[in-house]
Length: 533
Image (cartoon, rainbow, N blue to C red; front, top):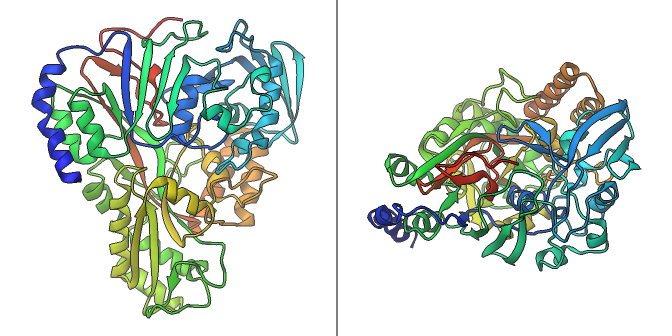
């Protein structure tokens, strides 16, 4: 079915040549995205597709531009008035979609709500835990008191959508998903949401910021790569994200399609089971019998599995040049990344030697899990790594499954090894460190996406010191130390950093984003300039 759909998609080029002569409606925009939106509650699930939708309906105190540089949002300015006190001046005249005025009361309410959201699979509380109390100075001034100096608070608050106290007090996640309380201050208003299918929005004509070009937005969810390309080429949609790498060369050559791209901040990596010492759920010996212990607790085994992976081969053959092999969380130029830390080189012989030293000369059996509809070529990456592991004697069964099934199982620690991704919006190493490898701690809000339950007190100590350090050069040095410790310990196995890809009708223009968010406000007619405030 996949092959026939892709053939149909590419055959539609000639038909698209006719339809592309007609510009997208000056009023309406139809978009197709590849990842599922799991909730409209902006505090429920820290997931890039959810965040993209949240930033169309809601606003945050601080925001990030297309290069992930911080800029004003609902706060016009902020400053540290004391080492443990941040003061934010709020934007006057802002209204929620229901006409309620935005004030400091809404900020205080929002901060209190975030950690109270029930059943969150990846909580936003990681971004509010540092706040000990919120002081309302006046309706347009708020002060955040932190337990200790906390230099990254403005960055963190760029992740937290501000809600209306009057509307959202007592509101459940289901109330958001039903549309009952999907009310924000953002550039678009909620119209309709059908989970797994589409979100419909309309322009907020009273928006305080740049006015969107589109009166209506149809935001469709099409996880199948071939279906998204076919929908664009047939003229059914105006814009798609996650352009399939197999279609990219043809689309780049076509004058009927415009491709938008940006080097991204998403690391694709393997998480490992650090939780179960007496046996991992999907590992047996070479004969299929229980081992009685977890090989992944041995650093030599983790290094062997990493060394077995030919990252450049994956980048060129699977990703077709749309990724950069990596040995850490972020590109080397990011704040807190290590400039000279290259991706590990593939060395199957060295990997076999490490396994033998660890007591596994005949290897073992493992299941490598991953999604098949979330990241670019995710199932193909898992298959390629499974073959590479099998060559060193770790006989690997691959299990690629739909994202909704996969992420629930990963959150229950059912996997031994699995492929997943993390997209950083702020471009700073504290973001993935806190979420992916910091020891899981609900009170601190650490390890919210540390599904392998890695724990290293040395990494945590460096990270916590960095989060207290107000001097930027010193803080960056601490983040680099924490990153190096985690990578040397093979807390995770980094594979590559994705390039972000979008495609659209040639009548459109797109402000591509390093954080990969796909948003209607970033699209405009090609002949127009960015809208004025």
